[in-house]
Each structure stands twice: as structure tokens, then as C-alpha cells.
Length: 57
Image (cartoon, rainbow, N blue to C red):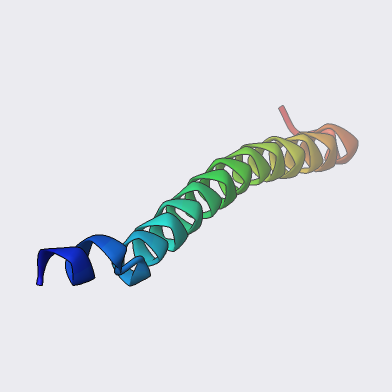
């Protein structure tokens, strides 16, 4: 029984895939946070340009 458990690699492979997936998720979250920040800045600039063009303070 112990030899069979020692040679069974299915669990190790599942853990490796889970770690890779976790890393991918972290990278995607970081990228989305960056894009969200840049998008907010862009729309604030657009809003400021409209306000400036309309002559309102």
C-alpha cells in the first residue's frame, strides 16, 4: 500500500495545475486593476476637456 501511494503522482499534478492557475489569476487581477486605473484617468480627462470646452468653471 505505501509503495502504491508513493508512486501515485495524480495528486501532485493536480496541485501543480492549481498553482499555475492561481498564478494566472493573480496576473489577470493585477492587469485588470491597472486597466481600470488607466480607464478612470482617461474618462476624467475627457470630462475635464468637455467642461473646459463648454466654458463652465
